[in-house]
Image (tube, rainbow, N blue to C red; front, top):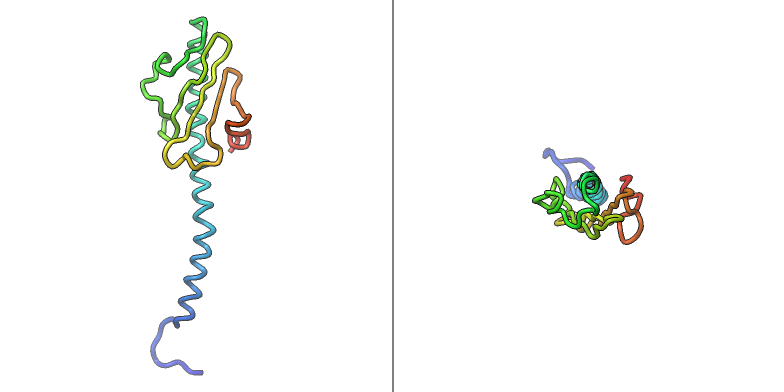
Length: 135
């Protein structure tokens, strides 16, 4: 079979190339989205570690842990990058529980809500597991 004098791709070659591109995209896009969600988790961890430090400073001068972020002087309850809302669930003389609740696109992240107390990361359900904290 001989080709005519025109150069270019046949329809079959074009369809094969498009199929390959579609397969590669279907594999790489979810992987990329998972990578982005994992990288945004560091925003929650950073905010919660700052909260834990602020709570320890507060507790050094007061008989109880702070029961809200406003008491600690935080005017904004969002994490540094804004992907999580930080709140104090419990604050009493013995302990506190701070949570980072995903906001916006981060709500679809499988790890969900991160939590911390005076001892460190809370890694039991319904909060993010150790695997989420370790990224």
